[in-house]
Image (cartoon, rainbow over all chains, first blue to last red; front, top):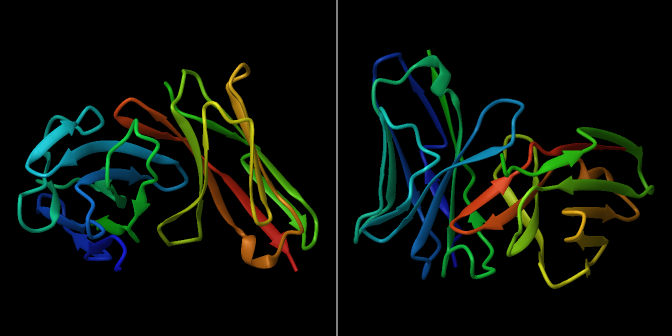
Length: 116
Length: 109
């Protein structure tokens, strides 16, 4: 059973470009979470999605950031018009049943975004 | 902020010694989990302790939870160089996980 997969592992963008980060959850998992880790800091929750639904996006900046988890295919975290402050590691996690049910979240290896 | 806070921020010990890390949080939780992150890698789940549990063991790991003090500790016994990593506690509150800033553990061979 493959774990959570994220791609690309490293992404370099120039200011103003778009960044698209992909996350494929573990087989059988329908809940996906995105976290951002700035250098020397802990992980910060961004958004929680189920298939075709955004459950909680309270941690995601209102502008330039969007996330989706379509019925088919991976979850996508999209950052438009990137700025240098967006440089960070973005981690995706998945679980079968979602938070509040004492389920473990399984993390992917992360995508390291560098904005030049 | 409901974010957990780990203490100490950094810890350096000799191989074979025990390492203790603490985590404090602010609100009632469903459970608390500890994760390890090796440099440049993703997080690895170590152990989950439920809010009605006080202590849990897994191999060389021992986790305690004191809900009255809103704190947890992670003890790694007989440390190894391979234990060198950052350790995060995460609290499950409603729909969100809250991570602390982590403890950076260095085990010197």
